[in-house]
Image (cartoon, rainbow, N blue to C red; front, side):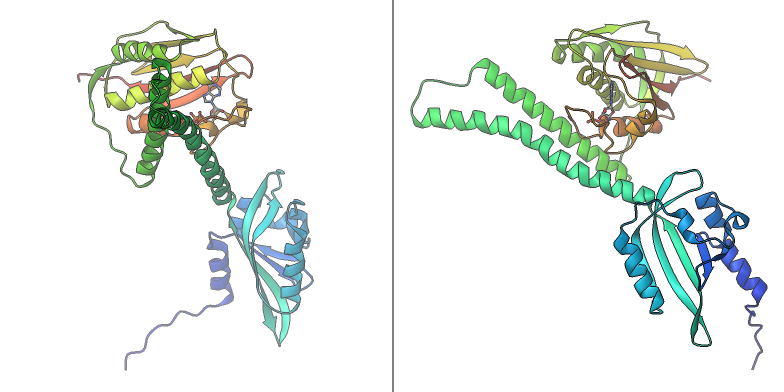
Length: 355
Ligand code: ADP
């Protein structure tokens, strides 16, 4: 029989395995003094092994972990059983809190607990998305209900009129209201469909050569019809040929413009302009509205994200879809704002060159 060379898991090899694990690992003595942390743990928490050696892992406590979690942890560990939880919220060296999926198990020697090994997995992002999804579900149900209630009221009154053989019919304003509410429902549903297309990798663009200047002018006119209490002005507009999906770019412009309308008071002006920078065209939509705090200016482009405002409207999907569209055009999108002093949303697109 052929003799095979079976690797020996000596101390050095085991140490390498621990050190190379991408999951953070912390090992304590049975008296819960830290005796080892691996590089992934150092990276997650910002502490070095030297800094935490001999200390109690409670230096990481944020005060946000429910007490019951520690209670059941000690109950399990003192009985020699492993413990697992998704509810531990710890604090990094820089003070930032993070949520971990924590798995702690005792290691025995001569029948007694010798040390504890704790494997962690940072689930902060996972939990945040979960919360956004939950909020999204309730917000979307609410958003869909509002237009449906209006439509229901109008159709019910029509049915009653018909039953009573009344001569009263829906007047032009009521019909316009139905039309607007149906448009709103269609937009909301389209956003949901687009978002799901992005998620399943089926968000396709159809490219052609278009001139941004023409598209901006047309879109500004379209939005003015709906935004009768605002002035939609065009600033400096440059001729800018781009290879793009016309419908999708119009969607981006409509979204930025309707957000500008939604988040700025009646009577104010919204200005759309464009300029050339190097080999790109930059399109900007500037409003005189409520503005966006600096620390929110990036995350508003995340799926479902909405800055908490008194009048919560929409799904928090519009800017996310804009970002996905611009990304597929090899461009960038960003916001600049000072609360109370309006916002400017801009995107850049590579110019079509004939070389
Ligand atoms: P929605 O408008 O449906 O909430 P969006 O993705 O379009 O979703 O926008 C995300 C968030 O960004 C909004 O909830 C709002 O708080 C903020 N926002 C977007 N545009 C503006 C703007 N022009 N001025 C102020 N805040 C804005």
